Length: 363
Image (cartoon, rainbow, N blue to C red; front, side):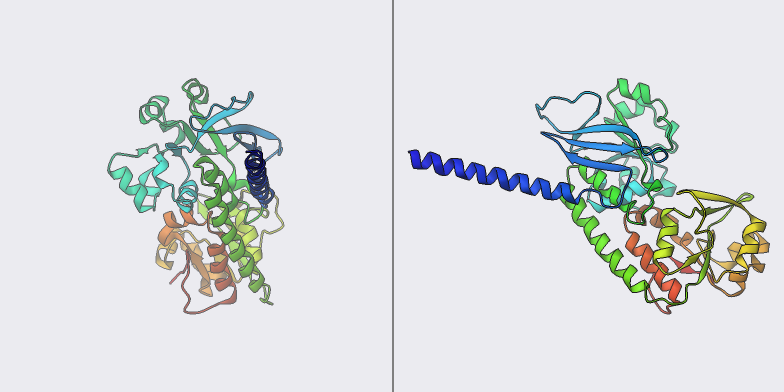
């Protein structure tokens, strides 16, 4: 009996140590590129921290507690029961991340149908199982309560979500997501781990991201063989303003890794630049490529503005776009930056007869 007790004790110690080692190994991997979010395993729950992109100070803390757990609710934190079974996601990039961990069915409210590519989600909308919210103000507390949604994930801009105080009274958590403010090209994709934690698929999220990281770094290394870095403009007009990626943005980082010389690479910020048409027209005369033109063909581009005919990149026929399938691009490029990088490397090298993930050369 004594031997049995000793063996049982040793087994329990061994199991405990193994479990702790596995948890420690997972925590050590952590977030390697994202600077605005972290998830750490605590005793009985996960602590999710989101930082403000401007100050880098902690903006919100969330306790992700297993459903039906009797663990004590920590104070000063918003409580989210996991796995989250119903949520509202108000950015198409979140759709792609939930798809990456096979959890599209958790989406019970989202943006307008015209911006969605995912077929499974579209079927849910058509069947009346998914609420179409449109703008943030269109997601009312009454609609959320009726749909049984305990969590709203939205793109954060440093402001509270509309009616957030009312949602809090209904025990609905509003979570700001700042993936678009990440600096490293892999930082945005790493927010997949946030969604993995929310739906309790941490290992799946880690495995997906690790493969993305491996592929991205491999392609980036291949791009280092490019000796002649072509100068690039990026973006397009919206009204009278030309919006281009800022020098520290996700898109600018990927262009750099692809061996491109982005014209505005030395500008500050992680979001967009607001430029005049005249400024970009002059800058384009020094460029070899135009990325992210706002039309799928030259005919449609010239219909937007006949002056585009005089761009140097247009005359050279070196204009590329994703607008032939915009919804697919916005849903899937954040979770798959290695696909975006591979497209850019093909463009930078001038590869012919290749299959692009997102892009197309204007004809």
